[in-house]
Image (cartoon, rainbow, N blue to C red; front, side, top):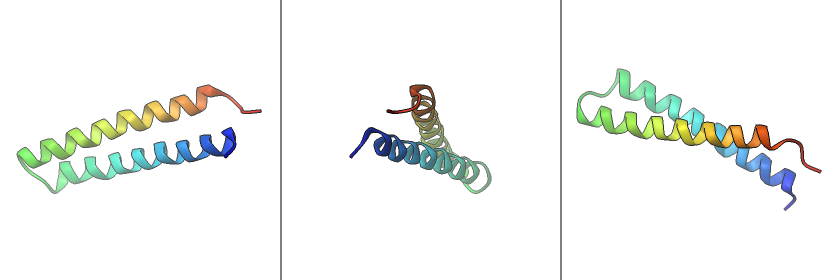
Length: 65
């Protein structure tokens, strides 16, 4: 697998994590209460952080040869 294709799949994972984070944040704010809401919110913000780091890595890595 070429480096370009690998970067594409890594970016898809990053975008997927950002979508999961968005869904989990909405779920924890509007549907859940109490301790379960805190756990889901923590997972959401962790996935948001990891997804953001992945996207920044891909963007600042630059074009591939």
